[in-house]
Image (cartoon, rainbow, N blue to C red; front, side, top):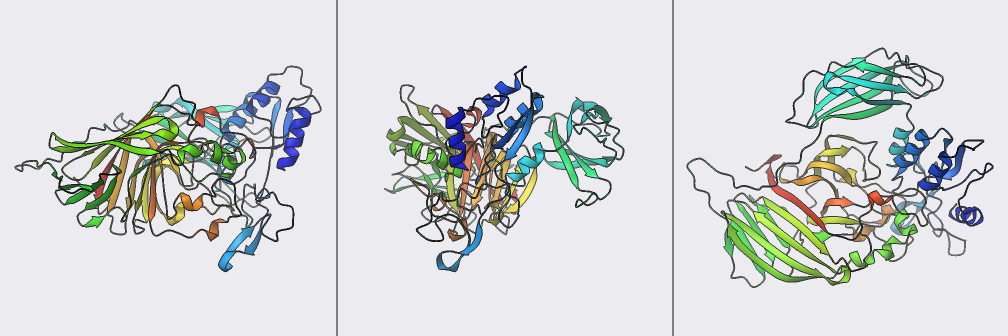
Length: 554
């Protein structure tokens, strides 16, 4: 399909005539046709939104255009299903095989037969949920939310909404507070009706959200009664990030004692406090031990380190980003200054770096309170004269013991989501395992990220671990795989997700942002500009707070 699309583009230049039924036209071309007043027929893309690997980022923007312009009718996503066969790979591991797996003689375009919304065994790939959301035909928008009024638009052309009922939930900071149901929806085809919900009072002290779901009253074909055919999430009161002013925990009639600093070790800066011990490597400037109440929160020889890289997706490889962004894989970090001091009964550690390979400077600042909580500020200053590529992400990563298997978070879920593919996911409270974060794409690549996170906890079976909050909604992931193990390197290899062995760790990535996924095609297109991370200045602040029995230590 990639060669077919390239041939089409070379022949037509992606320009439209009345007889065109284009493939892989981007947003600008779609909008140009949408604005035409002389079009004699609607535009339907015969192939578009290439669904290869971890993709479908930017599908929203396609459908914003399609719904905006009457002469844009839609298109056929390439493809419906990953077209691989169950096979035996290395060491007898069951894989889904693709071109190049069967012998070394057949012509091959590697995994270009795997560009489906669903996997070969008909399990939906994560990106299918985004498509399903934008294909729904009932839409909810605010009317007067404070008084519980919403607008319900019936996008169907030939049926009213009498076959459905609406369930609604009112959430405060992710927790369901009230629920209700509207049995009768009197909305004619292509019409909007105002619906009053008895949501009660809210306040400005919390984030308030309204979830609405439309369900079948009776069975229709393969769909059972109660099946959800559409949904939306509306904001009544927006999220406000917490103050990043880390304070000491004061106890009545007990003086606050600053953490003790041991400076006599040539390799480590050791910080001891009330039931905690932190160690920084003086040669790297990184935190590489975090022990609280006898629990090691970091693997031996692990470190909390800056991270600008992801395991490239199929779309990344198609655009050659694994080569264009290569400097960020090893930006040439060199420690130039490492200092520490006690300020207001807290320890402050500062590390400064040069990043010669990307012509930038990086500062890491750690503020440690009397209970072992750490405020981390990562600040990059770019050279405005340098010509340096974009990057995949801006954040940090650390390796925790594998026993930290539980993820609790308040953010978008439950399926993985990215900056340009998170509209099908709802903000809410989720509890999942690290095993559940990894999705076995046909070929290993970036997976498991969640966006718009308010807080994230990484816990063991006893409820011990860390909570992360940041100065703005952030993204994170936790996998039993390293980024390196999912990365094919300079060129796409003959790799398969089931053949990648789990590591004896939980790799926690904490990001200010990660680049989007894109979906225009898998042979050159980038995500839309608003989902890219161009070279420039960045700053990210987050707080790591030790947790005992699922509760932050205070």
